[in-house]
Amino acid sequence: MKAEKLVIIGSGPSGYTAAIYAARAELKPVVFTGVESGGQLMYTNEVENFPGFPEGVVGPKFMMGLRSQSERFGAEIKDVHVTAVDFSERPFKLWTHLPDGENIETYKNGSPKEVAATIEKVKKDEPDMLAESIIISTGATAIRLGVPGEKKFFGQGVSSCAVCDAAFYKDKNVFVIGGGDSAMEDTMALTKFVSKVTIIHRRDSFRASKIMVDRVLKNKKVTVLWNSELKEIQGEHGVKKVIITTDGKDKEYASDGVFLAIGHRPVTNIFQGQLELLKSGYVLTRRTLTEQGLEKATKALDDKKNIQFPTMTSVKGVFAAGDVVDIRYKQAVTAAGMGCEAALDAERWLENQE
Ligand code: NAP
Image 1: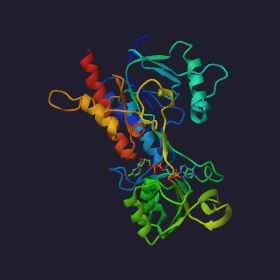
Image 2: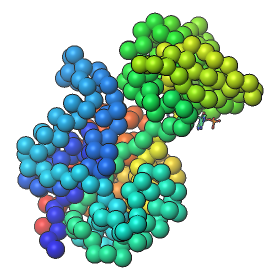
Image 3: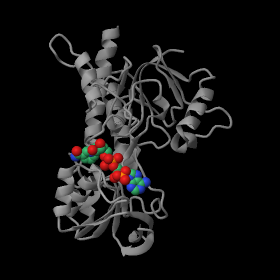
Image 4: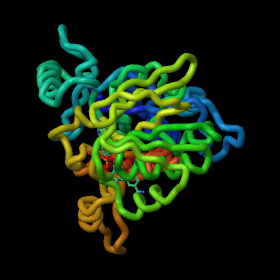
């Protein structure tokens, strides 16, 4: 089997941007979109903060645009999920099929043990593709609570991105769930538009940094319900009410929106044991914004003290971009930028191998 020059795993703004750049560089990239082709923006109504769209753009339309733009330059797009990888030697091996009796749902909702067992079975067969280089852009998913109404109203009053959606809630009454930095940041973003934000936190103190907590608590639009959990979201065409349990007692509150800020989970279960990941599951590269990333970057300095291939992971020839790496910004535009960087790094790295 002939090895492809570049395989891109994942199809959010980072994956497709990498594909556009790589295709224009005549690398003939193959993009595996995964079962949820298009990533998180497929669940976003209106994207108003991507430069170049003064009127905003509907999330799925934006993603279809990126997809056809990459196809126009020769990217080959395969709407399948990568079920296992082997990065132990080059060319790298990829599997995309599932043995009989195995279910793709395992990759989405299975425990790490279940995923590892499925991967082991997959690898008993011959790989489906070989690749000289890889870009990982599998993204991250916002952690959901799993309460009644959350799924039904997602994108219609329930959101996991206040920075993206706050402007749609002018003079509304909204709830933020969580007590970390994201919850504080989301609350501050919302206070610019809404009339009232209630933070629901399951304990009696926030884990967020003090400076952010102070800023939030000083804001007159903000109320906190401590020791509280969201039990249910109700509505008709959008969110109308929430049921909150405080100290064991349920109470109903009128609400126009619910913002989940209980963290993100990077989609890296197929890469366990194949390359270095942070404890939180994010892929470690030379541009990861942690001490470990700094260490990797320092070890990769050239004789001019510039970092070589910043988007390279701990495996030479495997690069990563977008939310799967990004512990901080998690924006479509930052993901797209990183996708461009990874494609340029992969192109230059492949040239050096020839
Ligand atoms: P996080 O720090 O993990 O906080 C998650 C919050 O959600 C916690 O308060 C947690 O409660 C709560 N939570 C988790 N699961 C829950 C559940 N099932 N039900 C109810 N509440 C639940 O996540 P994050 O706020 O997204 O931040 C992630 C990382 O990014 C952090 O390192 C953070 O510092 C960083 N970040 C930085 C900035 C900034 O510097 N501007 C902005 C955003 C994020 P408990 O506290 O009880 O565990």
